[in-house]
Image: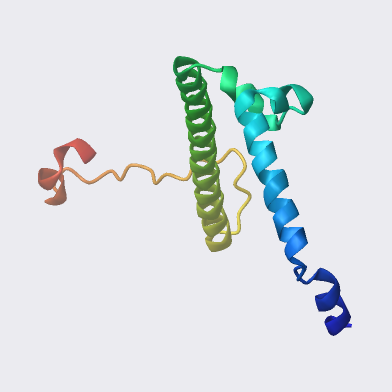
Amino acid sequence: MTASLSAHYAAPRSEAYWEGMEHSIMQRISLATSGVVRELRPSWWSGFAELRGAEIRAAGMIAATLALLAAGASFVRDQQDNAKAQEMAARAAVETAMPLPLEGTTLTGGRRHLSPDAPERFLNPLDY
């Protein structure tokens, strides 16, 4: 199978084939430089020939701006997702450590009231 496919797709050995190909390529090049080929069969890139340098730069700037906006939006969304994941992980850690119903509960320690003669009250007078 490999040998038959190799024989089928092998380059032609005839010199006439290569001379004919060279002739058709050179003819196509001469037609392209004279402008006849553009009228016969336009290529996909022929539309770019009509654009001026300023128009191409403006289109490039618009494309770059759109790419930066898309990248920025993706970055912000990724940061929000990371913050949400960290918040959920912290909440899960608290819930596993204290299996209590935590909906609507504030997890803060209350103020400690020290007796008036406690020496700690002089170290932090605002926490008294």
